[in-house]
Length: 188
Image (cartoon, rainbow, N blue to C red; front, side):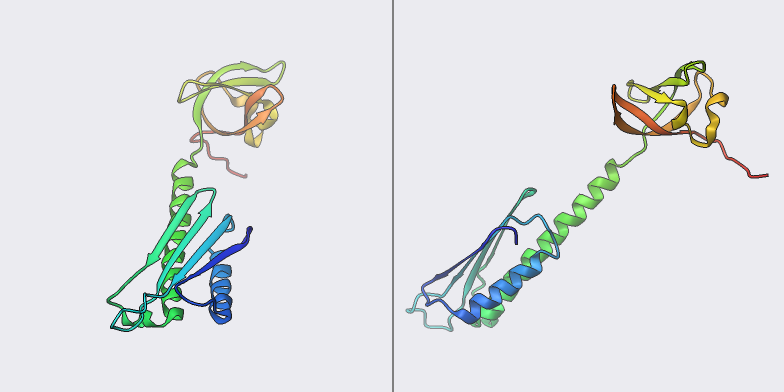
């Protein structure tokens, strides 16, 4: 945890054993996300006038740059929650599932957005060793002869389809690792 863990006991005396278990469960959350900035845990005992077993309620509030996760385990039908340790376990498992889903979604989003830009050669200047690519979305990207993979700069023509990686250069965005599309090189 990057920030201190906040633990609150409501309608019950603080318990060193429960506090130690909460710290242990909170540390496990770091396995799912290193971005967790804070974790607030409230464990609440039911009011004494309850005639059935004491069912504990656990509230978790986890804050990270990608948003907040709130979990409440208030299950009056789960007699297992008569044990505060079980109620804590279930609440933290729910938080772990949400963190795991968030990480998987972020990975999927990155995969969906991680595409290689495409375009075609718009301009060539063989004397000075550079050219320009018009991207499929209409941008104009500079590239240097050394960026062309397999030394194919001399083989390029206006209109040659390429894909490339972008990076920030001294003069703004430029293409690096320019690949001629559909070209296969054979070692002979």
